[in-house]
Length: 115
Image 1 (cartoon, rainbow, N blue to C red):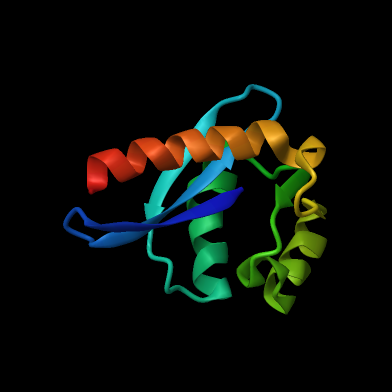
Image 2 (tube, rainbow, N blue to C red):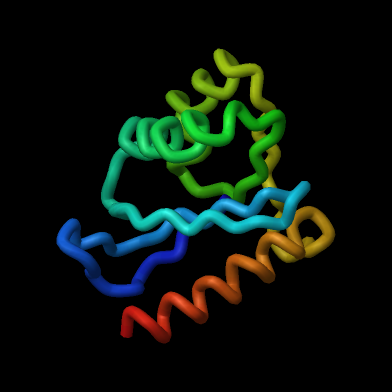
């Protein structure tokens, strides 16, 4: 799970970011337009409404060390859901190399269409 920002406002909601989620089992990608300025609570509600409500509760969530994912609210939410939060190590592609490559490809595509 990672953010793509700097793609410019788009649509009637003026989204300025995308939350990209890669399912490591099926290799499917979900690209969800959103607002980067939201708080950790906004991000959690967005995650609940768009991922948990449609796909169920994941067992593990791998993310970089974005402050939104490391906040106290998110850690309590993970504890309540029984989800394990794993952080990828910087400059260590073995932990999330496939997901990072897919995210980079989606970022390139989005920048071309939204520029």
